[in-house]
Length: 266
Length: 277
Image 1: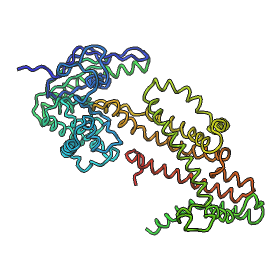
Image 2: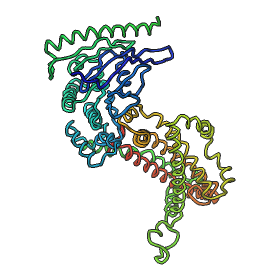
Image 3: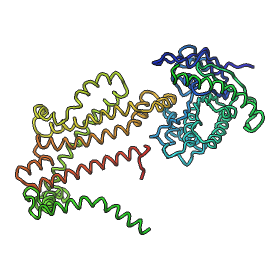
Image 4: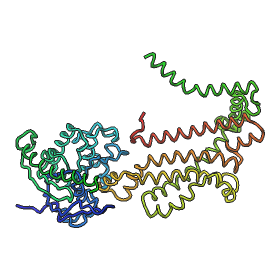
């Protein structure tokens, strides 16, 4: 039985105009994502993976092509697509509790219901003892937990994550990856996760979408069928890692050559 | 442990070293008649005058007033109250005008372009330069003084509010939009709090300017208040009262500034770089 994809990206291109001409950030992207899928967008910096995520989020419209969710075209940002940023983007003037409740207050839910939901989220993400703290008093990992809780509170069917664990140390990172997988399994969310870490993408994704460096196109899509919890030291994991490394390195090289060209003014 | 306590005492004492030396020099100069005591009275004379200026002028009479009212019936409490009243009223009016305009100008480019040229022309004119016009317009008394203070407080608050709104990190705006925030929520719960560090800096500069302006305005447009009192004392050649008055002005300024500082720390307890005590 084939269900209609939840998210359809059709012939999407994005062109940025700069002083020195035009940059084709995305070119003819076609991607169908099923409900409940865990997708990783993988590629070197400058490959347009964040641009694509921002387009899905509705922050910047594509120059051509369309993005539809459940058949409806994406026009602007909305709580049906919760976004988690690498920089956490917590509101520093709000406590942990107030940050998590922000989206719920916008929905004008009754106070008791908000409190119940916030309590449950604090519990789930091990943030109980931090409820009254301000973000400045939290570690990076804790902040990202709060950011995830804030988005989960909205109960959006789609989670957009822009290198959310990029700034964390490797232990915290693995910890949060496991937590994310747990949440993803429990809530059956669709996750679109941007990363430049090959290992992270193999550890997390159902499907890895490798992107090319300028113009950003889809180079290859790889489905990962390994059972979770995946073992990064297994043969299967490492074979996939080798394959992906070759693909990503090609793009990284083009990125480097482009940088050299720019600095020498060729 | 002992040495650290000693260090602490020494640390505290350090701050008093220069003022004590200065007062000692002052005492020496005036008591040895090196400087005419009419021009520079001794520190003790100034303190005595300050005390006299502070105390009630009439004996306590339970029929006329309560004890508390009597306590504050001296000349100085009256003057300090008059000055403080002008500062607070002027500052509040200035702030109430500057804050919404600053928020609008910061958030909306069209409003910014509409008002910015006028503000750029007005801003470099020191409020003091408005004295002649303010007297022509408002006569003498509180109105011209408060008008000048409003001007003095208005521009620093306005400029800082505009800067505050313009410097709101776009990541907060994006996060709020994706969480479904409406325009009103964005303005009140994101932009305004994000801009508070700037706004409070503006308020602090604004109240400092207001305090400078009140003293000058009182020297010219009104006949009470601390500024008026020290100018009046000059006419009678009461140098001890001039210095006592200046001392009061200094204390009041310090009190206002530390009050603002407390408010700042309270409102910005979430802010990085503010030490929470």
